[in-house]
Length: 132
Image 1 (cartoon, rainbow, N blue to C red):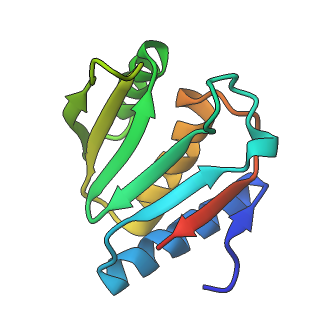
Image 2: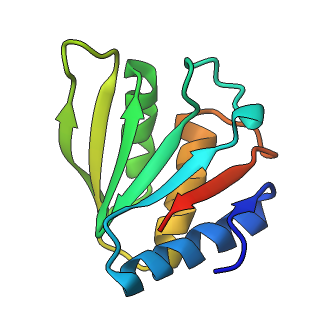
């Protein structure tokens, strides 16, 4: 991979698919996609939204509202399911682990929709792949 960020939906889908394929081909520990802090209009705190892929698992932190939107999004991705929800007492929100048994393009589509629908980002947000 030679590019690590994208700001349009088509570019992000390609970036996410390429990164997921590279992650799987390299058997990497984790692929991390971060939202550029300048694109973060979620007002969700100090850290912009992020999603990690570890093998066939997608990992993401959610507020209660975001978790409800995640569950609704999963209705459209029947091959994806929540495997684990962890809500530590010392942290606000929930860490969701979603099994994603699908190809890199489908994973990319889910990641894009999660940023747009779960985290409610606008269509011009910039995302960075910061680990493969």
